[in-house]
Image (cartoon, rainbow, N blue to C red):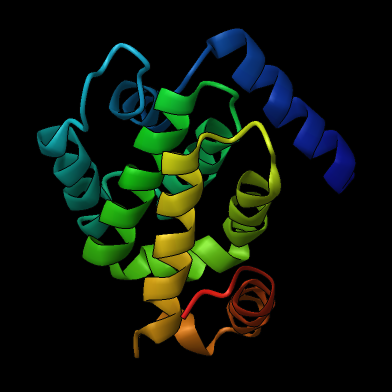
Length: 156
């Protein structure tokens, strides 16, 4: 079976089965019904990633999907969950670059419809990661993104 066919089969399976546990966790943690971050759930997600009960790849992919929605509350909670995962899960560092989350963060920053609080949160995360000595700092994609934002937005 070809790779394209296998990918299509997976997407069809996903469509008919509905959201999996991973997607459900991210949706619950970034629900627009929340007034503030659900810290217990965010930390539970980190614990599940660290103990390999859920996939870090799927979690970061799910956060990215929620971050690009137009609802400001969901965007903000997604950024908070992303920050929590990066701070508390070693595996999350590499997934942020691998799943092109930085590209989505830059789009969020550049989008004139993005509310200032969310734009500032995304900028702050990129700035903090740029100043850190963490694993994310050495990744070429991150380094390039940080430098472009630093020049265009005067961060750092």
